[in-house]
Length: 141
Image 1 (cartoon, rainbow, N blue to C red):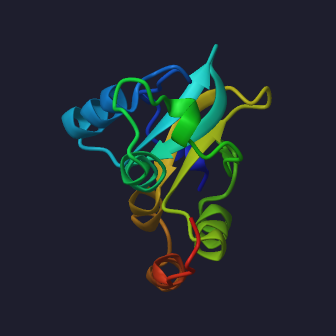
Image 2 (cartoon, rainbow, N blue to C red):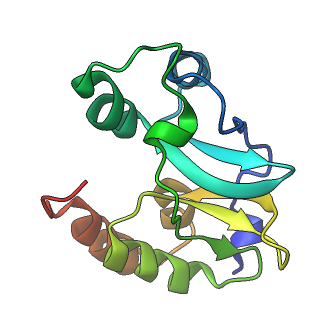
């Protein structure tokens, strides 16, 4: 099975200039924990709820003046729509990643896939192993 069969194709993105207050509202309203940062459909980074807190709020950042580019993770792991679900699930476990942007060959964002999306289609053993790996604390951020 390929990622395209389980990914979410409609993804809300923000530009690098979006305020962290706006990003937090999007996360609240859409009940999501991360938002891709993109410009002209090109993925530039990701902002997670944890990024907002650790890189923004904990440092006293102003919710309006502080932007996505100030708190985002710029080097984002991605997958492609034709990647195999089992391979992506294994990679997510190895890298301790819960969500991956899905890009095309020109690095344009075309969707997002989560651990939950993949685990519904994977073998129970593979899903459990990946979840165990993702959940290990590594002390970085």
